[in-house]
Image (cartoon, rainbow, N blue to C red):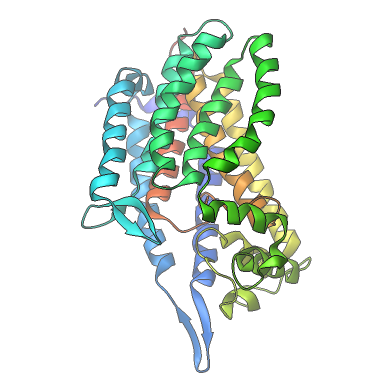
Length: 369
């Protein structure tokens, strides 16, 4: 595999630097989130060590993704799509059940979550389809694009994993908005989607309905379904402006805050570093996302532009939903915060996608289409 060293000149260094900063902020936060106070000192679970290992593996994967020309993914899109669908089907027959949900495949050395692979798959297949559409989408072409996305999304939702299933659809939806729709289609969707949302209530599982009711009023069940949101709000609020300091949070260290190393990791960060630290973290994420917008704008072919746009929406929705969930502004749906929350499969996918966007950036001056 030949590699032109001149490509190194065109790497988006701000994006690469921000990725590393966010990851190591996450490891530092996980060190605190993994600990709890004992009478004779402090005990720390090895989550941060595992995250470091996943991160190093992810960085090597990111470098590998940067080596080959991303345009080859165009021909690999459909085979990758069907392989992903087969993996999602395999979950129903031989998947591993954790916390009452069958979402993982046991590979021996790790538990792999195919729904994370499905997010990459929808980016690539969506970019391939939309790059060939020279005009705004009408009803027929929109139905085709959405229908392709519904195949993996439907299987993920059936696991059940509503959060990841909706993520797949929202990533594809963002890419569709980036491409554009005819005014008639856009106006129709603007009216019908909000009107049909109440009907989705009848298709939700009982625990999913409970999450929505809890979001509306967490105090109805403060020791049960509302416990996560209440403790998260207490943790963030108690941090005030400057925070309590590293390893000094009471809600996290005294084990009041549940899922503090995964979905509610940013609540630990907010308690220890306060409003000021949280705003710095949010600023880092905003600049991180902006670099992807720049890469999508400057890409020299439509396929690369849609890839970068899809990765933007992948990270944008996760950041928005996770932070909204932790602050009590959205229902709890189990979506992690990129690079901050613990997760092996998610960490590998995050670095893979950053490598993909950097790949588009590196080759923006080598050809024109």
